[in-house]
Length: 360
Ligand code: NAD
Image 1 (cartoon, rainbow, N blue to C red):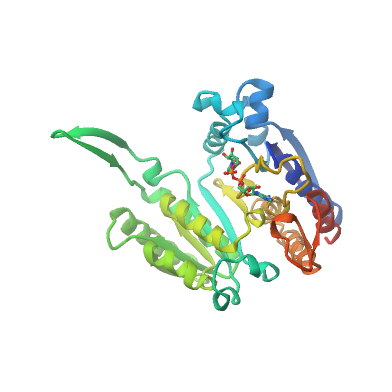
Image 2: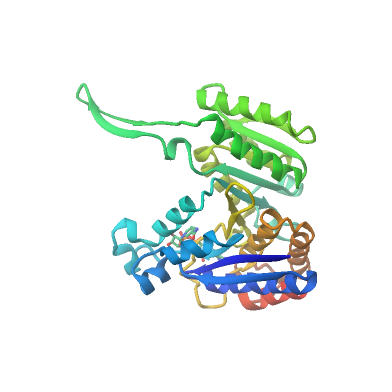
């Protein structure tokens, strides 16, 4: 199969970790007889330095013309970098927001997996962490409170602020379909999270999810309230497979779930559009404190590439092979500094990438 990939290495550790993900993709191509056409483009701080703006039309066009985008991370030290002296629309993050909007990315997927080899990093009690967990949080990205009408004004002399949480049934349906489709590729369980005991938007959300469930009889759908879910995430995370929720609930729950794994350098993410197109990137940032020192953990970037194989290219076997290779390298005791523990062998970013690629 031939596939076109737009590659945005970005800033900070971005170039180091994406280089390792590309190494792994080259190995996949060789082993499985695929051709990946990769076009490198700039976005974020490096694009500001080269072109004076964080996202150029050329970068956008290359992304639009590709089957998927593989990204590192963008941005620098927000207190010392000159990029943050610029007006907000010219800063690195403005490029990412504009890219997401232009590419129509509406579903953010964050897998949160506790690798048995890294159980010691988990912040939960041992009797909970020993059960392990492997869940995927799907957050709606384009609607809800963050995009609804808002205003602050004096009402009868009292300052009053209003934010609006609005969803229409089509916005709910399109992310619901993604959740059910992703669940079909996993353990076939969807937990839809809302606040239907209080909010109208949640009652509509629940109604649409119930309608969709009828079209996916193999998938078990359960509904959960967001407050109770926040507790269940730390009490019994093993119960979750795919969790789908609106923008703000997802923002909060996905950070909570990431935290309990204890290792940011291990967490990939995907943002999906209609059809098969997606942008894949590690959940962490550009880590300017360790950039250029061969210290970064490339596993989040490598697992992001595995998600690209699975969700944009339908290459299930290849994605499994990458994930197995990561698990094998951890089993063999190799660790980057951020996940290092006693008795293991510490390796740099480049060597970790090579070890994983060699095991595919
Ligand atoms: P960060 O995620 O970059 O770093 C937080 C801590 O985690 C640091 O100690 C860092 O060294 C460590 N870390 C992160 N990824 C790691 C990896 N792969 N291996 C080893 N250690 C890793 O968050 P921050 O310091 O708050 O942000 C730095 C910059 O990244 C900021 O400019 C921020 O805006 C940007 N950022 C970008 C994205 C993105 O590109 N999507 C996301 C988050 C933050």
